[in-house]
Amino acid sequence: MALAIVVAVVGVREAIAVVTAALLPRAVLRLPVAGAALLPIATLFHLLCTLLLLSASYLGMLLIVLLLLGALLVVSVLLLLLLGALLVVSVLLLLLLGALLSVPLLLLLLLSALLSVPLLLLLLLSALLSIPLLLLLLLSALLVVSVLLLLLLSALLIAILLWPDGLLVPVLLLLGALLVLILLLILSVTGGSGPEKQ
Image 1 (cartoon, rainbow, N blue to C red):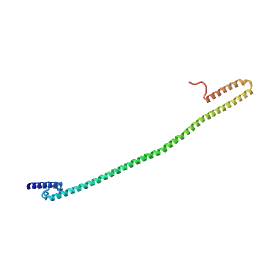
Image 2: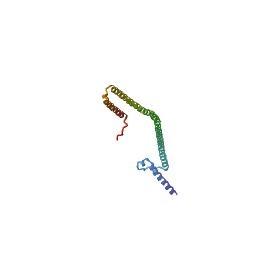
Image 3: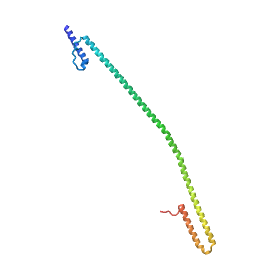
Image 4: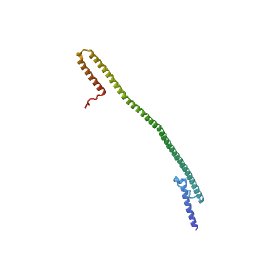
């Protein structure tokens, strides 16, 4: 029975020595660890507990730092999302402002179109009124020409009546030629209603 206890103690000492040697800083640098197996069991357990506590505290601090970094990343992502939302709201406000500014422009265009309709109607009315005026001017010109021709005819008739009888035939021929010329002049001014030209 004493032999089994010794073997068990030796087995525990070697296992603790291996774990302690693995946790020592020399083991990280791959330096040989010779004195770890010679320590008593209580000291090895105490060293193992101290190393485990130190590594746990380092891991806890690392975890806290990682949690803080994660929290900072979450806050920065939330701030970026808030900034993006503000940019979207500002773009929507600018679009709304542009739409509101385009409404008065459209109303002005509609008003100018509505105001241009009476102007076009006035121009059309003035053009329609100018046609009768032109016709009246043309008629007055024809009347002036006819009055002048009548004055000329009356002067010729007076001349015929005052002159001797031998000049009556040539004067009548001259009067007929003048009448034909007057008729041709009137037809040319009014556009003529003679035979159609093909």
